[in-house]
Amino acid sequence: MAGTADYKLGSFTYPRGWFMIADAATLDAGPTTLHFFGKDMVFYRGESGKPHLVHAYCPHMGAHIGHNSTSYVVRDGDRVQGESIRCPFHGWRFGPDGQCDDIPYSPNFIPKAACLKTYRVIERAGIIWMWHDPEGGAPDQELPPFTQWDQEADGWVRWLVDDFGTLPIHPIEIVDNMADFGHMSPIHGSVDCRYFDNLFEDDRLVQRFDAGHRTLTDGASGVLSLDTWYQGPGILQAAMQGAYPSHMLIAHTPVADGVVRLWHALMVKVPRDGGTDEAGRIALARAYQRASRDALGQDVEIWANKEPSFNPMQIPADGPYGKVRIWYRQFYNPREEAEAFRRRVRGQVVTFGEDRASAA
View 1 (cartoon, rainbow, N blue to C red):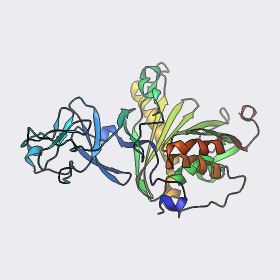
View 2 (tube, one colour):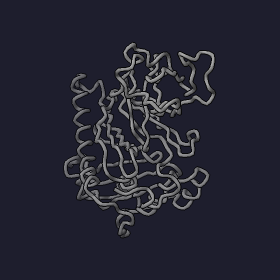
View 3 (spheres, rainbow, N blue to C red):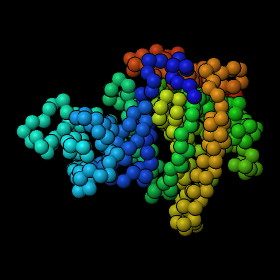
View 4 (cartoon, rainbow, N blue to C red):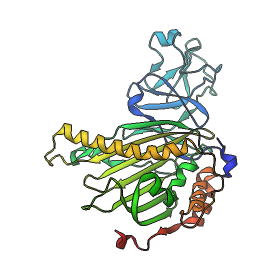
């Protein structure tokens, strides 16, 4: 396990960006303790159902907001009131902005400094997303819309989330895959590769890949075309075309320096008028998701058992690892420095093939 300093990424231990922190289906309304970016945090839902995320420890005397089962604040069901949350120790209540708005035994005096740190969260596509910025600024990146989630009428079957747990690896070694042409055949079973390139577009990094496959292509559909992209440092999406179009998500989030948590999900478009009943549509989509999850599992086995690679022994046929790492550094440095990193890599790098249109 190696920390950020070992990779010489920049000023910050953890990157700036939108990150997945939970499958929304695993979180109920009651307070739940989460640990990411080296911090203990508490997630809860207000009475409206809106998600909230706060620092885990009360500013009054340091009690944990979420870990308690014996306080009468908890026993009486008073921990969450409206959109506010109470500390189980002395009952101080903090609003959704983090400001203390009630002290039961001091109704006439509430210190202005009594404030619980809050974090920006959004629930979208069945997932809880958190904005993280070491500088404390507002988002300068867009959270992807995941529009397919709301297009069930058009045939899209919503994903379930596969939780791969934590890995003892720095996230840059996951992002390295975007440039890794050489692993496509031995790890993923690609054959007759036709085209591989990368597009560096500010906070977006794209991989385009056309090839056959040992099991996923046949004589009728000899080429599997993949468009894969990162929007920011921790959210990968891929659009896959075939008999049933699918949309993949791979999300990874730092837990501690050198430890990352990984999730996978896949939505599949199965037409409602294609002669398959609802149960069949869902079964087909789940089979696609299992195949996609298993493919990611081939990468995960490598990541879980490798030593850190600070300076890959790169050859030209590998792909542009160096440019990917320069692109990635924009998220580990002050945002005013981001353009300097983007300028160094902006554009296209073709690793294999000459023209994608003719390759397909």
